[in-house]
Image 1 (cartoon, helix red, strand yellow):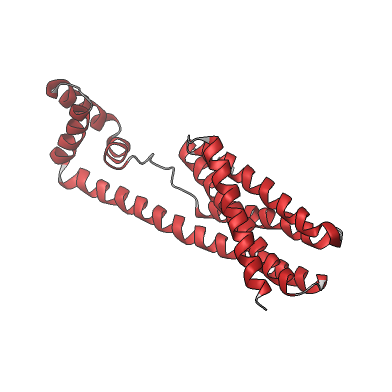
Image 2 (cartoon, rainbow, N blue to C red):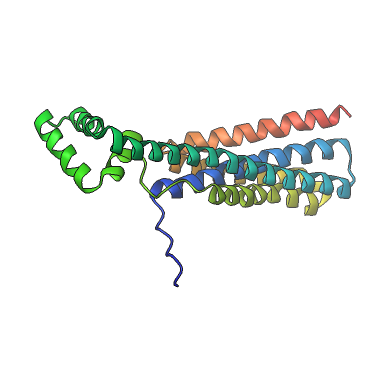
Length: 228
């Protein structure tokens, strides 16, 4: 028997995976650079700095992945529960479901008479698909995938943290701080740009905000490291 072909992802599913990736990348950058700067300010031993940074990178990546998995799994469970509830209501309170769909179209500016006709027609053809879309904005059969979000967050967090880690580890001693700051600025600017595009926000503000936050993170952790 041939394997069932996977359904094409909706835009919401794709955006959720990208969102997890952007958040993971940003978190990977800030947490890894925070540890690197703190340790580097306290010791000049490169192996110690590298191990500390690598350990934090792995911890951050898996922490972000598990958090995304748990969060999206909860959302998926909620969506599936809503669908099951609507299946029950279609059997026990069909008229109530018709009224809900009718009210939806009335709220969109359609006349009550036309809204009722639309509701009856849709519920006769695709009852479950119609009510879950109207009442919950759920595309039947398209639930957010916790594994997609988890792996996206895992790899992006690792990728985000690897740049400052490599800069601190391999740059010449005289230039390591410049290399780290440059790596943080560039990666933070990139995540700010991507997040602003995903959210239809202002690119310039998002990029500058991310860079400022990253530089504040570096400054605070450097100060903490110098205390010891």
